[in-house]
Amino acid sequence: MVIELEEQYKKLKDEVYHTVAQFSQQYKLETPDTVIYNLAIHLSLSIAREITGSYIDTSNSQLEACKELNTYPIAQEIIKVLNEEYKIDLPESDTCYTAMYLANKSLLDLDFNCEFDIVDDEIENIMNETLDAIKDQLGYDLRENENFVKGMSLHFYPAIERLENNKQLDNNPMVKEISSYEEPLKCAHILNDIVTKHYNKSFNDNELSYITLHFGTAFYDAK
Image 1 (spheres, rainbow, N blue to C red):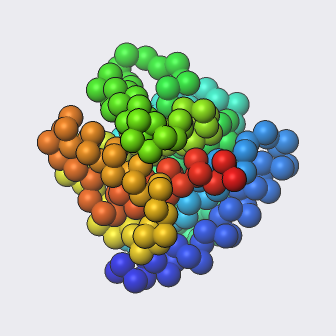
Image 2 (cartoon, rainbow, N blue to C red):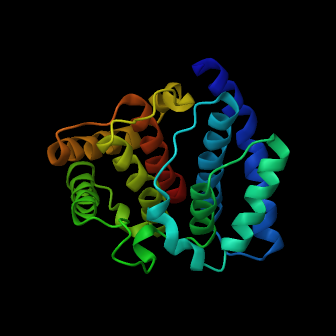
């Protein structure tokens, strides 16, 4: 299953990036290229999991506020194209994530009702502690990279939800790739140490590889 998922992911990544970039250009969105790249990674993994029957869903209640974004109809179009192209049925959560990526928004940017569980003070504290620790230990002030902070928040909240519910990813095709991401991997381990302190649980290698890739976009932007 892992080999099959990895093969699907590698095939999909460039195709999905091209599709998203086309819509971004068509609607004259000012979405940074690195954000589109992050979205392509997210959707490629989702599609690969649907195709191989290993999809892990997330809570839709966390994403209701994104339906008010002006990018939501565009996101619906993108998901419709991908569903038709790959003969799958991506969940509503992927439409919401796509809308937020295209709007270059983080979960913290959205207005939401108290009934939705988007922002938890402890999770926000973890992010702040992590960014402080990375600056202190490695000398990188990642808060200066707004695109990274927003993209990271989009991944971090559902990752924490999976951690709390013991539903962590178990077949991430990017596990083999992260060894070359030396500094981003150090950042991911710092985050994992802080998460462990708060939850008495840690991210496994599959989750950590995805987190590492998101940290990698911060360094990609800096080049």
